[in-house]
Image: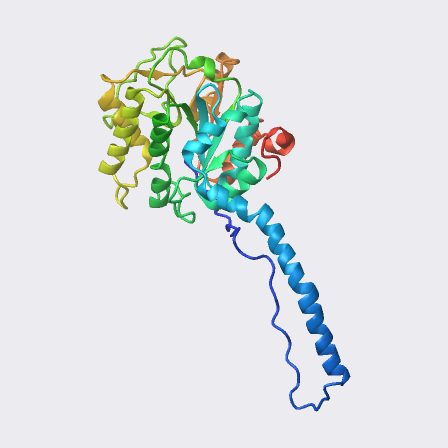
Length: 356
């Protein structure tokens, strides 16, 4: 995801929403009798506190323990293995990685997936606890956090070290799911599904991916890894990947992790995860069965949003649209609006999360 998003303050679910004001003090210089109205009032107040307030506290604690605290404890301890087992269908899971500011995009993406009847196999990898709790509150079992959580305050500015740390967790998540024996489809949530992508994952290839380049390809183009560009590597998008649990796919994930270690973020070289993914693909192209998905079905933003002629010529072929290469939360939403792809406003009831 290449956007800087405003970081909303994260609500601490463990904080106590009830505050108890300190008792007001009495004037010690005023004489009183133990049978005076003041004393009786104090005594009655203590009776009320002991007889009413403490049972209410106990009741509140009981209610809280029933509804919130076990949920918090449950989801904090929920593992990726448990989550994938819960959501997987026919050995396949659809995965995204989301932090709190991206929740509107998550909802938009989910609406489009629900229209293709694949929402039940979606697993949200929450990158902060607020997202973990919020998603599981409305859609129990469909969110998991793989600790440690990234710094929520620094993870959203493209080119920042926080963004690098956020995105570089992706191959580790995917490798773990592959090791568990599942097919896994990864999506960024600034996407919209227009059709069912699964028929395009034909054959038994290890890794399926899309090209981020805008030059128009023939409709029946090669499915081989494209030749490298000027920087010596390809420009494959790391935001839409389908993997089978094969030794080849696992090898690509491990190589991706190695490349990220070899190309760490620095102020001079503001790296992200995508170049490392491309280096990994290039170095393993002769060892792994790679498959380039058709451009007409999975176009980059430079085609779908900027090449009207191409869009017209390929009408009816588009499957997943990626709203990338545009910086800013509001700008992304506006572009979705302009192309009738912002579904949240009028179709939120179609999302399994509802109006979160």
